[in-house]
Length: 486
Image (cartoon, rainbow, N blue to C red):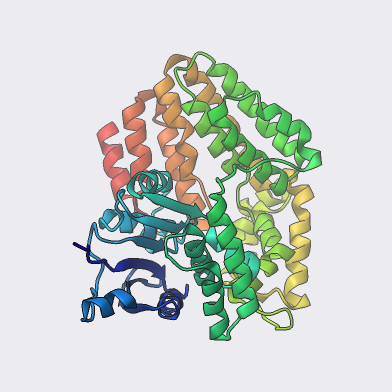
């Protein structure tokens, strides 16, 4: 008695513009070149970034069909619990495939890129609206029989191609299909389009899939930071990743001395929380202190917009060839207040207090400006503005932010010894302060409002106020929560 062979089923979840259709067609061509019958269908999605599409491919050996004397009946859509290979072009698409039941721990190979393309629902939240990436990774490890997970988008960018060729290479490296590597490569060659770059990306992904390379934590490896790196070891292991990120951010933002101040401030909190039951307070302080000390001012924005790495990133994103010219148009809308914040303390304060100065100067900053950084007339003003970084400590904005930071750290250290739960919630309150302009003013006002009631709050009520403050722009949820406290 012989067992009837079953089709090999493959589900591909890809976003618009990532080449999901190309990948599906490559798999079909690969199968047909190796004496398999193939069929693929696609169902476009809506309202998910640029639109997520599910491609479904089924393969069946031609010899088995001929032996049975009839053509196989292949499915049009993936069925939960009956998919051999799931390919996801982004981490959350892998999570959605798991949630749909397409990934089985008994036989499914899950191949996914470990990078994010954030959904509109994640971006529009005032706080951190991102989905839990670690939860998806953990679920993927449990849900699949075999897991291939690495940052495939990075490989695509570094090789100058799109992610479809990387996914194809990861599929080949996984060994989930009964075809040799040469057949995959020949499939790419037969297309005649971007063959060298696609083969280069394919090879990189093939090796990554074979090696199952683990993700690495960021390190502070540059020689000038060696002294800073040595101090990272003074913190608990679960806090060290946050500290490394903080050092790297603040050296890039200002200088090594500024990163040293960051570590000095953390040492103070570590001493205050020495008897704490866990490391939550220190972890959250390390994270939000680095973000707050690296606040976004006009100088920072100009710096990021004029870096050579930005132009390189844009070139890769638009897939411009080395001999192709492209232009980047930056939109700037600094208000009168942001301009004053960039000035020395005394001058900026005087201008803000002067109604005459506001009446004369404010109209010049009521509209946004489109600036072409590829032209000297657009690049040079931003370039020289970015060079003002060395004078940042003397600006009005720096003085205001630094005063708020010192106040916050003092309160965290004070409450760490007498109400640890409240101190831990307070350590997360800088989440409210971000960006610039109206967003920054709104967040700072709500933060100050919470601090003015701190003596009347416990940990639960402080957390409720903070979460409510992040829910909407008009403050309805926040005002409702304030009424409960009152």
